Every structure is written in structure tokens, then in C-alpha cells.
Image: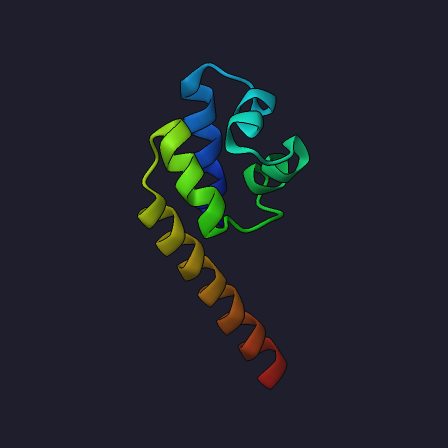
Length: 83
């Protein structure tokens, strides 16, 4: 499970603002933020830095967690294909 998405959703909830408001502050579309919040899209460094500024989340930790998630996915796919 991608642990980045729930963390971002929780930060948005704590902020008391809507996804639409947060997306505007991040200078990304609401649908892009929605995709991140629902685990359909990875958090880019661009967005991680802005999330840090807007929601006070740790961009470094977001990027590490995103990378580890992607690495686990890649290993699972490799194992699936190689079996």
C-alpha cells in the first residue's frame, strides 16, 4: 500500500481546507491532487516541495517513502514476470 497518499489526505484534513484550495496553493490541478491523494499518481519532487510549504509535511520523507513504494512495486513485477 502506498503510505504517501493517506499521509497527504490527513495533512489536507488537518489544514481545514479543501483539496481544491490546496491544489490552487500548490499550483496544480484539483484532479492531479486527487490522483495523488488516491494513490493513482506518484508524488513528484515538485509537488513534494510545495506540499512541505503549504501543509508542513516533510518533502524528504515523502520522496523516500514514494521511492520505496515504487521499488517494492518494481520488485513484485519483476518476480511476477520472472516466475
